[in-house]
Length: 124
Image 1 (tube, rainbow, N blue to C red):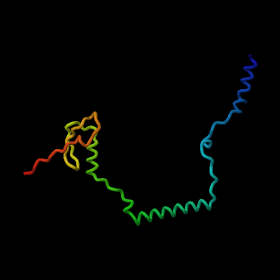
Image 2 (image 1 turned 135 degrees about the vertical axis):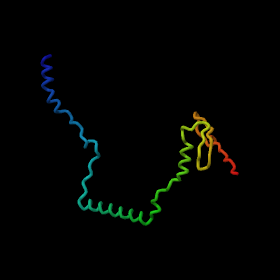
Image 3 (image 1 turned 30 degrees about the horizontal axis):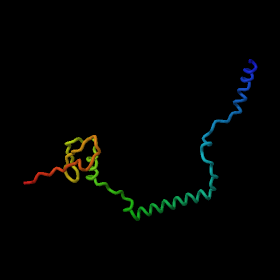
């Protein structure tokens, strides 16, 4: 029994040295491609510069294609009001299309029919 314990403790450092090394970051990366030659690298840079100049020229010649489409603030405000989760039955909302009273229920999905138009008072 004692010899088995001595044998195990004597073998421990040697056995540890024979285990596989811990994985490194390189073990998880795809195999490396060969590095490009200096001339290939310069060619890549020149191609990228050429593409950047083409895009820049295209934007200058056709700026209308790159303008953001402006959002109609009145429409955005109306949509925000109509989708407001805090609306309760009887609430009045003002939208681009006029004034409405909310007749829906909070426990049911919202529908267009939940908003009843309020007729404006005739002007004398």
